[in-house]
Length: 156
Image (cartoon, rainbow, N blue to C red):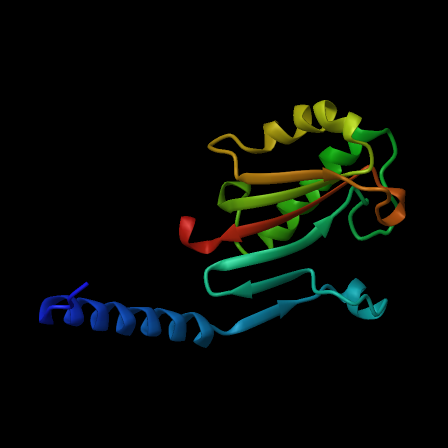
């Protein structure tokens, strides 16, 4: 294939644009957010990490607010509390459920999938984020469900 001056110029410009975008991405500051509870208990993770316009939330389970006690009542109650915990975490960063772009769902038993979905869908009145799900052989505190999410500030 013979490269013309126009093709060489186009290739050169494409490379420059790619380098420019990659440098912008690398230059974005990374912010780590940990709750006082995480700090006090020396938990080895941040509750959230912001990179540019993205907020990465650690997995949430159905614990009661400001507690390590799992809510009682089965998968539906745990799912509701998990989603409320996600809402609260997003609110700390001035985001809502509508700003979520990706969720990953971990279920202790894949048979809980339909019951989980019954509750989950009510938290997304505008649109559903992209989602992955899988079954595990154990979650923290013997939870039935854990959900981690990615939010986007630019969707506001």
